[in-house]
Length: 365
Image (tube, rainbow, N blue to C red; front, side, top):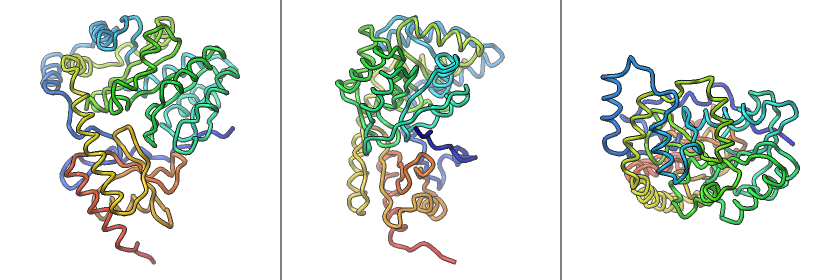
């Protein structure tokens, strides 16, 4: 089974693109509305008065607040420096023994494959079912004994969403095979609480992990805070591995998230705004004749017209209009772009830039 695509050097170099000015950042699925009120003040206060003090290594207050928010016990929550660290620590925990294996989809967040490879395992990947998660193929691998599976839901980069029956099928397969399935729900806040089937299952005692982040709907990408929710036994194993990094969640992140959790309605406000603007983006793409995939997230996957060179198309948007989108060549989907849902004004600017690139042939020679 082929591995996922290897990212080229400098894949994340475009995170250095300046924010604001004449740059439009629609390539990293960032929240254009910022964090909940008061979080900036919390970070500022922590920086001004306690920058010389180590953070709470156990993150006790934070984990208790997260447990209350998600309706689980504090021993069912592990935190980390973004979801990226949670993914790596999970791979270190469950793939350390020789002969262990990990499965994920061939086209998705590259951190899954990279984390497995970093602990000396050859990740198994299965192709998407069109633009949807290949639930049957993933379940087959889990039943055959895969030790770990990463399932991105909603799926980055297509925006596809699992239904309850599909989540249950993956849970059943993992339990029959003895492995652990990780539902990475970084974008689930944009789909809404009616789709939190994996979290409901974990609350009911199913053996799985659910990861969440404060980088997306909560607008706290800069402070880096991710978490995993799962049975206490699995969380204890992850936490033991993470013990090698005792201060991985800094004081500013802990304070910011604690302040954000005082406003639990905030993600719903962001979701409503994102849904409205995503519909506007879809109408603009339709008007331009650009095919796109229905999405439950804060990004939309768009087909580039013939000759279908998405890297060149994205490069022109950046060079000629200072509009940055993600070409999906490196993720194994050439000919497609992933475009973040911004504000209404940003969609208007994007549409103008897209129209200009479509109307003007690329320079040659």
